[in-house]
Image 1: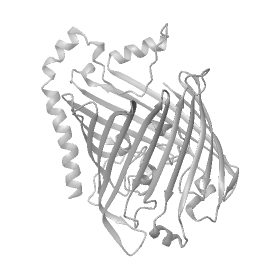
Image 2: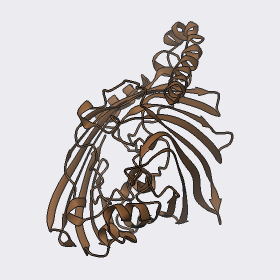
Image 3: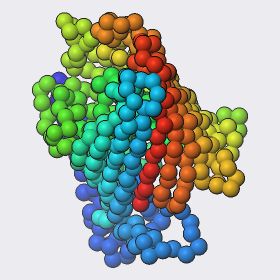
Image 4: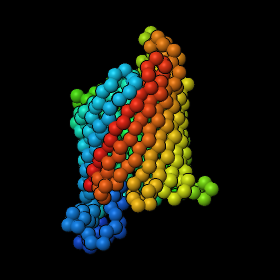
Length: 421
């Protein structure tokens, strides 16, 4: 039944988009002859374009690509860090990530109104420090799926101004439990999705693609609703397939997300709230090897507020009462992001993050230890060296790694470098 539901959702999405596109092909020749108005650009490229007094040759070529509806992107990031005190052993490590792809605006290319697609690949390499620290949280956010993957292979279609539908190879983390404010942390406790959800092992995430479809409804500028279903299975996190396992299997499970977003003002300052739930259906192992479960639920939420110009704060929470599956049933993170902290360097950022995660009784029993909580603090400074290049030194302090109190608190300095085009 789960397999049938997901197949229906994915292929009905493709059918709806295909029918809408067929109705527009009669205007294609006319659009080609008339040319395409550059003001119709609707792509969601990751490339950041800033104003400059005199455009470079690369920027002129980029503008040509944009006008033709094809937007390539490229980024490389690397983190080097070391556990210099505490934990289980003192050790250094490095991890890196290459992410590249193309955004397609099919309205510009073929005249398919409000239709876009994305194709991308990713390579991750290196290793992490969680085993050296003894933590359930990884200090290097670029660790997880150390291989090469075909990642995005998806298409999205707008139906008017309020409704859009996406289907293809994608993950939950592209649309749910995310904020750009998370991206500045070296630790994957914050960077990426709310980490407790991923530790459940029942949601899809970057860089492990799977089949999925997502419906987005935005009735006003302040309110947005999203509903999505994703394929789960034993091979989803198998790096040996490199994102190329397109099969559906009778043993597949189903992951369903619902999220509401509100964007507005609190006390006259920009703010965002999102609230969501994750429901998983299938057959799931529990920490009690004699039992299994066929359903899982987790709730999560986020609040961010601009405290003053350039200074933003956020708070997240996630909770599940399924301690037999959820290793960390409760997690909360807090962050501060201050752009322009130094008036002489207006694009630099001062950063602070704090996370607490509590462990379930069932997980503690499996470890044969008394576990309470683990706390991770991080302070960093992001130097915007050039338009497309940053360097970010940071230090992390892991309190009670693993939650037992038997491992000494760890100090982990590190540096992040990143370039993107």
